[in-house]
Amino acid sequence: MGDWIDDCLPRAEAVASKGFCDHCLGRMFAKQGYGLTNEQRGRMLREALSDSGKDFAPADPCPLCEDIFPLLPRFAEAAGEELAKVRSDNFLIGTKVEPEIAEREKAFIAEMGLEDAESLKAELNREIGKLVLPMAGRPVEFKQPQVVALVDTRFADVTLDIAPVFIAGRYNKLSREIPQTIWPCRVCHGKGCDHCHGKGKMYPTSVQEIIGDIAVEMAGGKEHFFHGMGREDIDARMLGDGRPFILEISQPMNRFVDLEELERRANVGELAKFNSLHFVGREMVERYKAEAAFKTYRVHVIPEGKVDKQAVVSVALSFKDTGIDQRTPRRVEHRRADLVRKRTIHWVRADSVTEDSFDLELETDSGTYVKEFVSGDDGRTEPSFSERLGVQCKVETLDVLAIHYQEQ
Image (tube, rainbow, N blue to C red; front, side, top):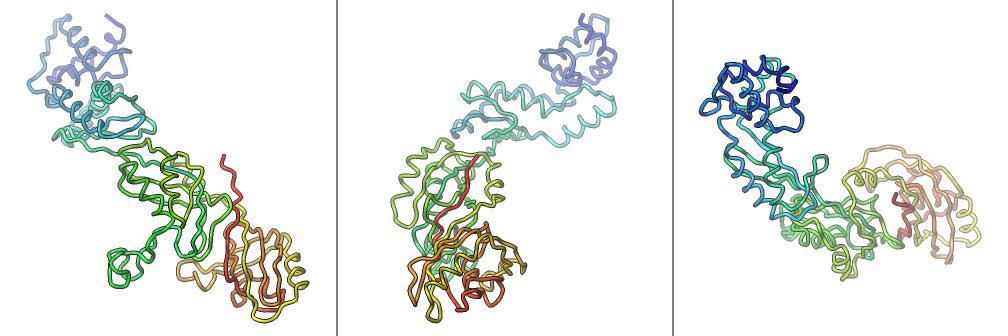
């Protein structure tokens, strides 16, 4: 007789006297007897008690689990059928048990001081998982499962909890008439009304929808969410290598999306282009949102009066690593807190200067309101290009040329 059995026998007698089945008897001593199932552990304890002249037959049904274990093949088959609908690298089994059983077990363990016990739910998860494993054709993953088959043992129902797919890449926005993300109608908030012609949104499409709708179809997903590293105005273009973004697909039935095909299909139109698509983990979303990357812009500026070329060039050169204070612009104050933000203009270059217009190329901190840096926004940005030039100026067009971010 093993030492662990000798150690457990006095308490095992009290447990076995309740009429528990081998599973439930063994589970009360789950941390004893290495390499055994709870059923094996319970059987060995019952035999040891019998050898010592104390016979405790299991009741019918078990007063603790109510004979749930003979139903394991049924649960496993149901879970296997649902998992077969999903293409993933791994899986995990979860269970829901009758609340009364769970409470009864918890109270018994506490009353008896059974520090080596494990829960019925933990045993069900493991034993169903063993049966599902050959059906699933993929390994179990405990820390970050891609799909969890949740078995409701009360009704043998199975629901799938599928982790989202995250696809990172860069996009170019080539149109000045589409937003980065879906813009719900201001009047109906997405329900559909006369103002939005029943579409529920302000613009026919967006960068998000151009790639997201295709990705949802390919992944057999439910919805898409777009996480950009910042955003440009609707009337601005995003050029160069593009702006980093992450596309999130919820409830994907197929995690093995062909990213080359996705990129090819998304790039058919002329409104936006996508490149460098690759899969990333959930943690990258927060990293993208927190990243404060420098940005390079090009703006075409219209002054209200005639300007001198030398003066424009001189003012541009004066903004070298210059700190500016920007109070929340008038145009966004309805959706941004009224704060004064400190930003840095790293450099500015002027070209194509005529009396009536000029271009500026500049590099700034992330979060700089470039249009307001040029115009001054009625004194809400100080210093501004208009202030130093002595002529009120307005940005006619804006292009983002580069987001200076190197993915780790």
